[in-house]
Image (cartoon, rainbow, N blue to C red; front, top):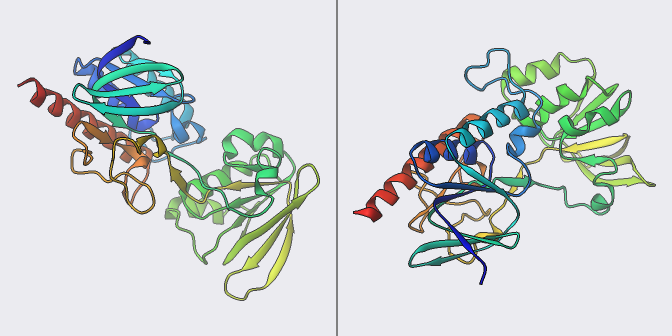
Length: 311
């Protein structure tokens, strides 16, 4: 039987929500483990510039902000393990988590596993992922120096990354299924003033084509039904996310119809001892600052829960 390492609280995910929770729990002298699949920061770490995080009037690089959070959690004693969560078992002692062949136990869990990028779901899409289709302009913009690219989406993430992409690409098309952006006014205004960006409204991508790499998009106007083609060197998808909750099926955490976790005021779920924070939970507004706030509340909820168990 494998050795089981025991903790007061295990935090699943090391994005802004998970890292903030780790800062609070470890600072509160709770023995804390953070399990992360890839690297600290989540999607925030892939954002070139965050303009609306308090304390950074000139903006802050998402990766640098995530690293500061990571350092702060480790400073207070949080431990980190990197691996993919295979399953969770609930028992009288609390919860047992298996990740990449290792086993851990804790009396409380904070789920902060975020979302995975949503794909278009069109034929041929998978063929070009990594060969012209990407989910991170900050990561891949340098490949498009002097080239043409399309951004799909109309929220803050899409428009911030469209602006960033113009530092490299000669032309950026923003393709949006509506006739106005969902992005905040200040972000939208930056894009409207950028002469490298062209907006294609009321339009969806119906198909992709190319030889070894993406070369062409098939477009449809959702109002008129008119079809057209657009030649591009790359396409970046910012059309929302799919919650990473599959591993929770064994313990009965309540989800909404889209798979997001339902939470109470202290980020508590329907399962005593399980809390959720960040993009993984049902909420209207998903930003780095709200994820951090969720993490702090989840840590507070977990600390109170553990205190009740001691009485």
